Length: 243
Image 1: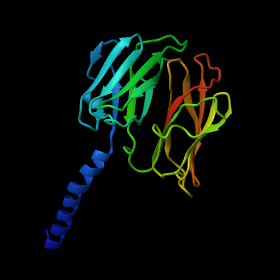
Image 2 (image 1 turned 180 degrees about the vertical axis):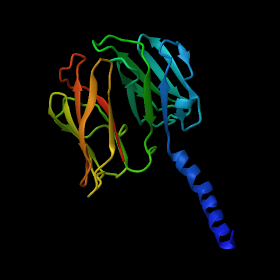
Image 3 (image 1 turned 45 degrees about the horizontal axis):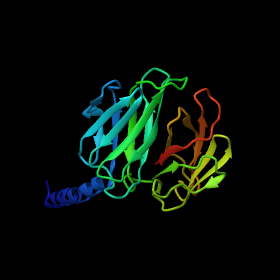
């Protein structure tokens, strides 16, 4: 190895040591595979869970299909915010959603409810992801859509984020039909990205992404929400878009 090659490698090693920890510390996020739905309280598989704070993850069941997922140390310590996504897991027709979350203290606690396809509470496995403001990397955004009957509105800035710094606007075109616009987050001449959405609240409503448009200046995600019987419904939801 030449002295020059050694110097270059040493420089990269130093940069990695300085930059990577800073990036990791900025990425306040976590995820979990909740694989023991009938347990009163348990620590989920460490193979399929992550907490950027390095704290424990605990899932507590308070009733049929009702769970609290606690990410220790991941809270905002006085500043609420963040985003939660939940997806049911397994071969059945169950659905899961986020009821609420508490991120203002030391911990981040996401409350989850799961239902059968007829809307009855059910114990089932699920996957959940939580993120705090500024936690994600590259281009991304999220929002808590908390005003489902409004024709057009800006969602809560406490629970929304756009890495472009642009505004977020939600437009309702008909019952249960929404377009979520993240200004400045588009790819210009390139399209791509990903969208995930989870219904929010105590009922058995579900939401899904219909399509998205990411070429041009903005990123627009189209969302549809339904009752457990498949009828369109106005409801709150949580959405996350990323490149």
